Amino acid sequence: MKRILILGAGGQIGSELVPHLRGIYGNDNVIATDVNADKCKHLDGSGPFEPLNALDGEAFSAIVKRYRVDAIFNLVALLSAAGERDPRLAWNVNIGALTNSLYIGKDNGCAVFTPSSIGAFGNDTPKDKTPQDTLQRSNTTIYGVCKVAGELLGDYYYHRFGVDTRSVRFPGLISHVAMPGGGTTDYAVDIFYAAVRDGAFTCNVAAGTYMDMMYMPDALDAVVRLMEADPARLKHRNSFNIAAMSFDPEALAAAIRRHLPAFRLSYDVDPVKQAIADSWPNSMDDTCAREEWDWAPRYDLPAMTAEMLDRIREKLAR
Ligand code: SER
Image (cartoon, rainbow, N blue to C red; front, top):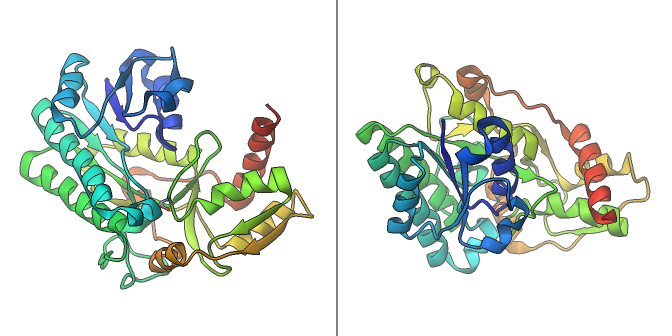
């Protein structure tokens, strides 16, 4: 990868992936784009930015040509709970941005990275140690339908046209720079702000609901490692299970109480989010990612919790 285009640079992942990639590949070689320029203000001056609606294929293609891009990172998506509010919009945005990335990637010789998710699994999938290759009838959210279709589209463009498509199934991502929004795993971010600010949190997902989670620095590392991996080693492409930690709200609260002993957790369960969470794995088996491109996370629950609390304390103090 020499010149990288990021779609959705102002989102939860993009806000940290852009600076991370600029640190590795050089500021001028990472072109940030977003439909909402305001969300990218914090990137100001650190490298190129272009306002872009990823659904506008002509404008998208022109930017790829102008900057001679050789890798496209498509981070555009409505998350799971947001998708349920407007499934038609979610399909159009999530699949539209991906389709454009794939055909523009094909026409311009670009590699294409697009995240998949734990949402690519459904009620019929084995819940514990969910295998890399397994049943994926993810038909309870439009988000999941898009993720399964997206994985297939990525593999199709690789087999049919030789496009270098690669992807990971991200767990819920925990971070402190930009907020997620409209996801089912958002509680695992919100809880830290509430813990620091109020010493208490009301959780919209029930006790005993286990899901895979990951701290953002590991997610950024995964993206770079996978995209730089020797293609000869890749038996899979779209998409790799990657895992770092699995917990339920009680276990997360217990980890927070090691730093804030008085922290209180209560529940007001959102039935839409609960049904989504119940349809997703408790924990994924990431053996293939470890074997094929040396995936190895650094943060477990205690390490992530300690760092999140520190960073959010600093942030709220500012
Ligand atoms: N974090 C996403 C969501 O909750 C899952 O990939 O929708």
